[in-house]
Image (cartoon, rainbow, N blue to C red; front, side, top):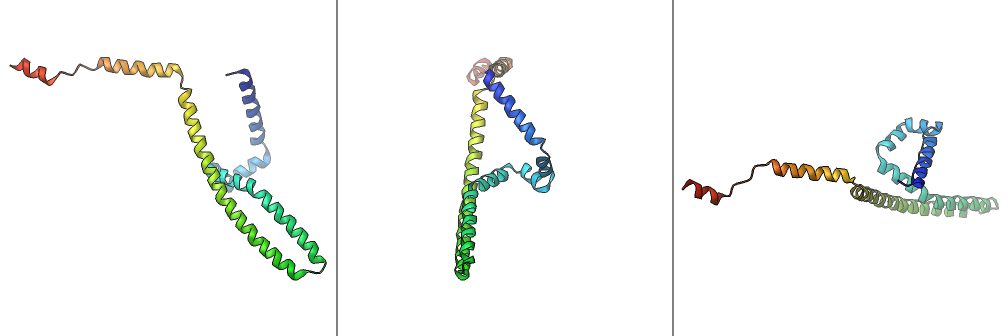
Length: 158
């Protein structure tokens, strides 16, 4: 590997050690939810994608609620209830759609990861391993006795 790749790998390892030794991370990973997500990486990836994608609609909804609350303080209480209810229904629809989208994105990312790791493992098979396999195949072919042709058998018995 190149020197830059080794340096990048050391930095990545250092960052991961820092995250894994954080007391909040350790306490979360020891909880039931943390253990479940550790055992089910697809669910963890789906949850992460959902949280990342739904942050903007939730922020817009909170800004919307705060602005309508300010308007309600000025005397428009009935309108605020209707508008917040409609906004809540819109948020529910948006989050449901984003949940389905996050599952789809997680599925695509998982398939890409599996495909790329398989390709990388295939491309970077060490030459010594390939040579050993070829040597084993050649030794097996040489150790097997030759198969006699049935037509030769008939001529010898006559």
